[in-house]
Amino acid sequence: MPDRATQPSWPFSRQEAALIAITMLWGTTFLIVHLAMRHSGPFFFVGLRFVTAGIVALVVFRRVLAGLTRQELFAGLAVGVSIFLGYGLQTLGLQTISSSKSAFITALYVPLVPLLQWLVLREVPRPLALVGIVLAFAGLVLLAGPEAGGGAVGPGELATILSAFAIAAEILLIGRFARRVDVRRITAVQLLSAGLLAWLVMPALGEPLPAFSWVWLGAALGLGVASVLIQLAINWAQRSVPPLRATIIYAGEPVWGGVVGRLAGDRLPPEAFAGAALVLLGTLVSGLRPRRRPGSR
Image: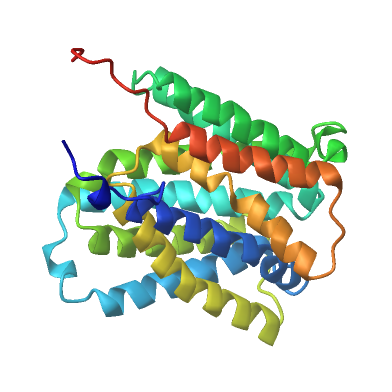
C-alpha cells in the first residue's frame, strides 16, 4: 500500500500550478492593454509586444536554436498564427465593444475546445471534464454580467467570436505538439511569428503608425518580456496537462481580472462572486478521477 505520508496534499500538479499562475498574470494585463489602446492601434501594439518577446527568446535561447527542426518550425508557425489571430482579433474587438461583452464572447473558447477536440481529433472528453467545462462556462457568464450578452452582432462582436476560435485552436495545437518539440525553440518561433504577422496586416487594415508614447512603449515592452515566460511555461506545462484540463484552468483569467479590478476600486455584483466560485469548482471537478472498483482494470 502507498504511504499516506508521501501522497501529495496539493490538488494540482506543478504544471497545473504554473498554468494557474499564468491566469493570474493574464488577469492583471487588461488594465495595461486598455490604457495602451488610448495611444496605439491594436495590431501595432500586438506586433510590438510579440516581436519584443520573440527577440528576447532569440537572445536567451540562441545556443539551442541551431537545432531547430522542420517539425518545430511548422509547429511554431502554426501556434504563432493562432496567437496572432487570438490576441489581434480580441484587441480589435475591444475598440468597439465593452470589456464585459468581450469577456463573455471570448469565453466561448471554453466549450469550443472539447467540441473541436471531438470533431477534429476524434478524442471524446471524460464525463467529469465535461462537467467542469459546463461549470466554468456558467461561471464566466455570471462574471461577464447580463449586459455582456445583449445587442446585435457587429464588427467588434464578430472579431471577438473569431478570436475565441483562435484561442481554442492555440490550446489544441500546443497540446498536440508540446511533447514532440524543444519548448525553447518553439517558443521563439511562436512569439516572433505572431508579432511579425500583426505588423504585416497593418497596411492591409489601414492602421497607421501611432504617435510616440511612453504608455504604449512601456506596456508593450513589459508585456513582451512577460510573454516569453508565459509562453515558455504554457509549452512546458501542456506536455502533461491535457488541453481540456488546461482550458478549464485558463477560464480562471477573468476571475483574477475581477480581483484586480476590485483592488483598483471597481464594484463587483454578487453574481460575479458566484461566477468566480463556479469557475473554481469547475477547475477542481475536472481534475477528479473516479475511483476504480477493486478488481477492475
